[in-house]
Every structure is written in structure tokens, then in C-alpha cells.
Image 1 (tube, rainbow, N blue to C red):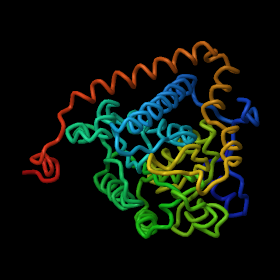
Image 2: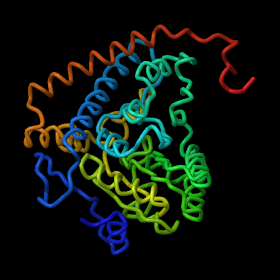
Image 3: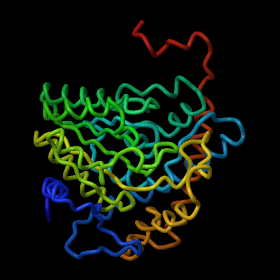
Image 4: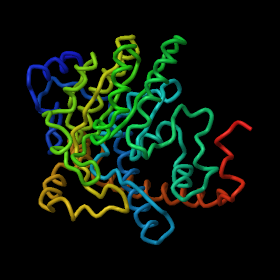
Length: 345
């Protein structure tokens, strides 16, 4: 099997097709492709179904006026979960953007804390000292220079960890993206940058953001590999990220991964996507549902059956509801809490 670096070389030759391992019916497109261990596949399914349950509950809370703003992961679950599974949360750093909920939970931020933060409970929102993760970032691309700094610091200290940072396609139009990538390449930091290309930066389509065929091409300009992968194919995302993480651990520098997917829901709960995109486009994206594709693979290979999937789905809804009950026990903030976690004293 080719390495990530070899895949990146194919991009420079003009091959614009994102890497794909799984057909929509759950079959491998080639029998020699690497696949994750069965336990990883089942963990991925659980995380993806948890993400769906969380989306449903948070949208309902917003409609009830109990939650101010929420960005669903719907349609992007394989891109988020598949790229996080190769990480070791005990030594690697996670730098999220704004819709990587299943990755943040797996990295150690309790689901109750995540929900509490969305409900405005400041005590819940604070990242615990033992969780190697930055807070979610609403300012587009502002987290990327920090991600490079963390990776650079770990390299200087000789630590074994790497940093994985997320951003969206819209972030690649920001100056912070360029500055972060340039420094990452110059200093060869242990960074994996996952660009989730969901085709829209809020209402601006991908074609109005860049004339480039693929965002992954940009990596070569910064002196490191870039590879595009089908972001609805968990197996492909996992394998590409696994190799990029291994590359960073070896000291071979950063890798950019463009996960080509689609935002099946709205940008966030303040958005009305029907004003700027055609419903037929959404329907075509739903035919490539990443959860259905991985479920088909798992069933085909005897890892689970339809009843087992239903059971996990029910369990994940119960898990989210239990976490919500716990989140409600965090105290509501008062004026004295405004700067509580801003300064040391």
C-alpha cells in the first residue's frame, strides 16, 4: 500500500479524485486495501451514532430556547471520527474548530461538560488540566497558529506527542491559515492539519473561495504533503490520518488532509441553508451518508447486525440524555465568574 507521501505525490500529478476505500454499499473498492481493526470500526460506529444523538438533542434544546447556538456534525461524522481515532489522547493534543464534538468527547472532554458549555455553564466549559485540548474556536482559523505552537513546543521538548488541528474550507481563505502552514513547514513540526471541506463556508460555496481544484494542493507550497480523501469514507480517513500521525511521530513534519464531505444540515442553528443551496444537492449528499456506509461495511463483515445497530443508537440517545441531566447540575454563571478562568489570579 502506498504511503501518505506517495498519495500526496499523486496530487501534484493532477489526480483530483479524493482517496476512497469503501463503496456506499460497504464493499471495499479493492481487496488489498488496509482496514482498521474490528474494535476500531465498532468504536467509530458508536461515536458517529453518539454524534447524531447529540445533534438531535441540541437542535431540540435550541428550538426550546434552552441553548443559544449549535453547529451540527450531520454528514461529517466520518471525517471527524476517522481522523481522531489514530490519536492517543494521553500524549497528543487536539485543537478543534467549532463542530468536532465526537472528537472532543473521545479526547477526554466529558459529554456533560460539552453540553454544559453549550448551555452557558462556565464551570463546565473549562477544559480540565489533564485533557490535552484547546477550547472550541468560533473565530475562523484563529486556532491554527496556536496548534503549530503546541506542536513546535513538543518537538523542542522531545515529547512523543503530535498535534491534530481541524479547520473548515472557509478557514483556508484566512491569513492565520497561511501563517500557520508556513511556520509548520519551515519548522517541520509534528502537526496533522485536517481541513474538513464540507463545500460551504456558511453560505459561500467552495467554488467562490478558491480557483484550485483541491485544497490539498496548497500543502506543497508550504513544503509538506497534502492529500485529499473521501470524507464520508471512515476507513479511508482513518488510514490516511494514521499514516500522517506516524509521519509526524517520526519527526518527518506536518501533513495536510483535505476531507471532502458535505454539510447535510445547517451551518449552525442561526442559519437557513435553503436560501443559498438547492435541495436536490442535499438529497444527493444524503445518498452518501457516512454512517450508513460504515454500518453497511460492519454488517457485511459480521461485526454487527441491524438489531445491534439499533441497540447502539438507543444507548447513545440515553447516554446523551444522562449527560444533559448532569450538565444541568453545573451552576449558572454570575458576574463574578466572568474572568474566573481568564487570569491565574
